Length: 542
Image 1 (cartoon, helix red, strand yellow):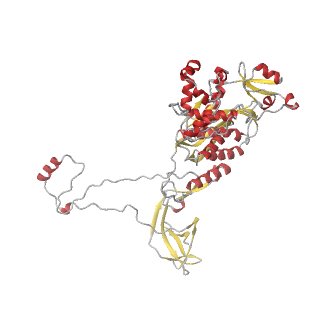
Image 2: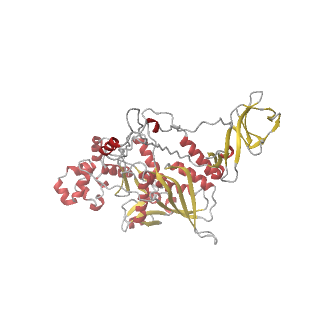
Image 3: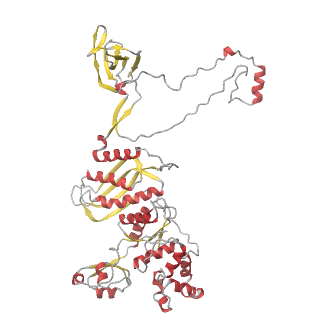
């Protein structure tokens, strides 16, 4: 189980204490604080001696230009839920824990993502893409991973990724008691009784620890060491996706919005994984700063593609191409992402013996990217139409994904009577007794009066071959010696194929098609107008 500790206000990793410089004394610094103590100083305040847990008066004495920031519980909860939503792409079991910690049950996901090391790297990259720093811990238990993640933050241990339970026992025993959530409540009571590590706390009498610190401390230790069950309620993704992001500064260029939009797209990918779905269209709403008089307050950017997907990188690529073609009406101060077209995601099935996969998916992504960069009206494809006229059987249309629908129709036929077996029995008739009684008294028809039904082929009668090159407009031919002429005299070598169609749209044709050849062996596709008798050349055979 991996437990990343996320912090939106942290400037980075904690550095070792050093003597303050003259530049640090004159620079403004910031710190997150509650009503009494400092919770988190920035790097400048840390160099001046301000530490987590210091009193407010002591912090002002060390850093006179210190600015204290209040903690917003609502915003921190929303930020933590945004990270949890993005991490649903790795496992369905994501839990929001104490002290801005997110727990992930990754036992079933390790092999899918290429091992524990690769999985942790991807989780850290996702948290960083959401705009937060993280400290990772991995252990067989939830509280064990939580303690290792916070130990990594305070740099009290070097081993933070544990897989075996025997190793977990040894590493947890060396951790300080101050890591426990209840340590801040009891102050320095643990140090006064000579208890500095978790191993020291476990050796104390259980009755005395319960009487002085409550039963919660021993329960936490038992769950951390794997000696007691630890049920937790998993984080649930909302039924519909809507993510909002307030920008820290106004953005005036569309290309600069992609960095902030990446956070929303990562949340969308996690939401799609949680719902086993894919998206083919979303809308990015932009809240503008009212700097210009005629600038709109809101604008939207709709992005759509052909094949539904939940790949965050592919969605970001399409959004980048869309933003490159967009000019902002006014500076943007807030964004909101809405998933418009969501469908069920059908993952590809693996086979026992891997075969070279088809390039249909990669080709579809290529065409989607071309549509996003060049415009949907500039990416065309040939489409077949149900029309007997050769010039209307194909059309050029805007690219759309090919949706293959395989439907098998089962025909129900009645069994035919064989000579000597008597009349055939209807499978949908009444009971057997009724049919037997009817057959005894009804006159038996002769075999000649009940001939077998006509058996027709499932496919149509094959027509003449079609040429590979059809002229855009038929070419009218001359006649010489009552034979069509195209550079040389042509001789008809096939039977007649008659096509009469198009009366429904006013472009009706009545033609007799033939295959003709000249004296050099070249073959042509001709037709003769039934009404006028004129000959036309319509195509060439290769």
